[in-house]
Amino acid sequence: MPGAAAFVTAGFVARLAHLTTVLGTVFLVSSRTGSYGSAGLVSAAYALSYSVVAPLLSRRADRHRQSQVLVAAAIATAVSRGGLLVAVWLDAPVWSLVSLSAASGASMPAVGPFVRARWAHLLRGSPRSHTAASFESVLDEILLIIGPVVVSTLVVYLHPAAGLVLALPLAVGGLLTLAWQPATQPPVAAHRVRGTALTTPGLPALLLTFALVSAMITMVELGVVAFASQHAAAAWSGWILGVLAVGSAVSGLWYGARERSPSLRRPLLALAVGTVPFVAAPTTMWLFPAAFLLGLAVAPTLIAGYSVVGEVVTPRNLTEGLTWMTTAAGVGISAGSAVTGWVVDAWGTRAVFALATGCAAVAVASGLRAVSRWRGAGRPGRVRRRAARRRRRRRRAPRLSTG
Image 1 (cartoon, rainbow, N blue to C red):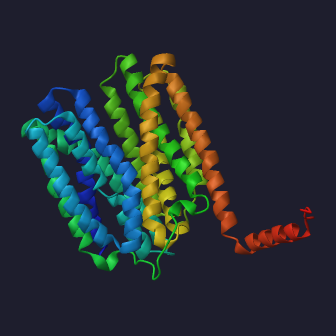
Image 2: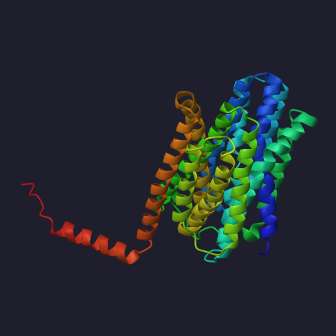
Image 3: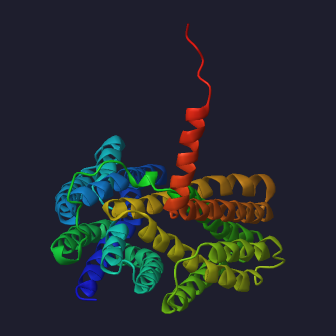
């Protein structure tokens, strides 16, 4: 597509900056303060403010074009990130680092939904939109792999601040480059738009589905680490998770190469079934094929979810709707991380894997609920007939006298 390579590249750079910020903050703050607790607090402030504010920035982009929001965000993130670096270097109090880190997260828009909104605008109604959504999911997998590698390498061989210093020009440059491409950004509505994407029928149920899926994946990943450690094979845990990522990337490429309308039912069912082998795992080696099979279901689920949002959410709320998906995933990851440690200590790794299977089963039910809501909303004739019947019943209902 004309202009696609440019906005994909700019989005990739900005998203890499976001992924390197969290880990880079931990490395820098811990090296200066000597406290991983303080480093985790400062990093958590960035992640929390990012998750809360990102949907609001996306709603602003839907109302006033992406370019305006991206330019303002680039200026704000340059000031806040620069201030954080200076504050850490001057050994400022932890509360000031938390405040600056939160400001940095609040100034960073969810660039992935911005890019997906451009794809949806260019390819609305075309089966190639499915391929574009698949491509973006594969890019997410690549970013998750190379982000930690880049940060850890810079920190080890250059300086503890190198990761966070690199994130500053990447963030500002990526945001500004994306803003300077107005030809591919979605248009704004001709009249003032009110309301939110959350009023889209079925979207709240889909957000719950994605939160549960993210929690399930987090439980499986942390459960794998705990299982391998208990079986004196902690070194294998990273390779097992790598196999899961490879399976997800392979299925994303295969799934995207097949033109089809987005469907949530089969990917969600495959994801639920893919968690069962972990519950019955007798040895660490068993987890390798189990991780690959589960990975095959991860990417199609994420692709189908984003594709469906791109079709059912109105264009005037598209970026916001896609961003709510990212926020739901972040909430699921946080909840999964918090619950997993407690369950492992209390009942062991098999209980974690069983809980992950339960989350996947609930996700299937929630996803099917979302699909039924969309189908009902997509039949306006039926909706109008039901509304007419309700009005007739109200007219025929006897009225109580007030005399």
